[in-house]
Image (cartoon, rainbow, N blue to C red; front, side):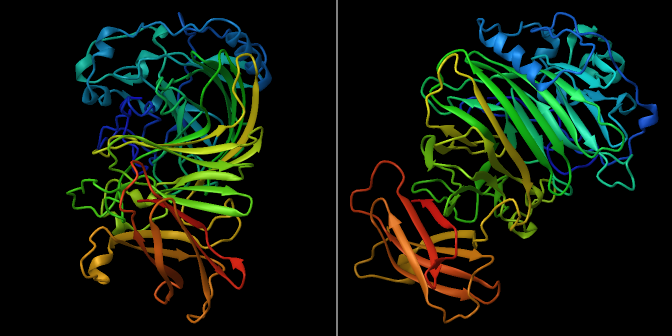
Length: 558
């Protein structure tokens, strides 16, 4: 899963400024999700030109329609695709485009006057093919008047010095697209980019005031398994031009890959938060060992809990923390579990959290203070979490967390997805629906019930604070902070602590109120077994008061 971003997914400012090359490492299984900076400048929509040349030699072809294409029509196409052998797209990218390095690819600029209006409150810009973004996608714009292909227009790009004098035909097509929105109804022409589809089945979305961070994607196939991950592609998009002053936009997509084909409907409502209602029909060509539904991909380099994993090498960095997400949240009936992310294992690790049924899950960025990151350009504190709420077809299964060792923030090394328990068999369709919502500071209405949240996990030597004779340097002290509704205000309140460890023991817990925050802190010592297991030791803790659970379940590894 490798591929540089077309533009830096940092703060929403003018398109095209790049601070870092975000490259997805192939070992993880996540092609570049999306790219681009927000369009904060006022777009001249009156000067925007509509480009509608047909795409030649595109595979698979999607013939123009007299009437708008429906989700069911896309599902029928996906079913027909899945009934035949998989046909990969031709490797037809001109060699000079394929040979572009990152800087030369970044130098390709879409001319603002080519921006395509999608009603008064939305607009679209395409991405050029090149570098690792080799594959073509077909794009159609549709309204009540019918469907028209959105074809490549060479006059709409400044190709930069490396490609000076080059000109490409309409058959070149595009690699993907980005959509901007007028968040302020009083200034509908002031468009900010908020949604990107670019690479495999990846897309990024942000809420108002946020900057791009983690990616979502349509589906994950065999992530982390020995046979290697597979990356189906969105090959064709149908974008509905919103009627009037509508505040939402609908996008249909056709997915194809070696193991399955599928149809998607994305009903997107930008705002604070931004929301996406996703409907999909998947048609397996062959059995899939691990089908990841509603997958999320992110980056975690290091955080407040230090190396977290025994033997991990610390980072020599002026910044206290570097990550797009700091934890996984899983909601099941009667429990909500928080797993802080870690980095530094010797090998990739899969953790599984059974959910029968699943009420929701997401990768969160809970630390929202600039002082926690001190990165003026990256703005990690403004990066969104994404919360997934299943609405149809998920059933019993598990949320799987895949963590990859990484030494660079240019690598997305975290994948989370729901993997159904039922076997995925060839010829057996799956119909699914779920909702995505961007998350900023918590609590948020999308995540319930109102339990207190784990807001920090810190770990250090227990020997320094509680010396023993002889010394036991392997002992670790955890300090876990909880904040949120339901916590008692009385510092003398009787707090019950539930603890568990898969090896060794959690001992001597002590809970105290933190008057500076209004939260509670749990101190607990971990004493590892004399013979440490090869893999992770899983630790869990939660607080109760007056016979009622009042916090999430803290779930961490040692």
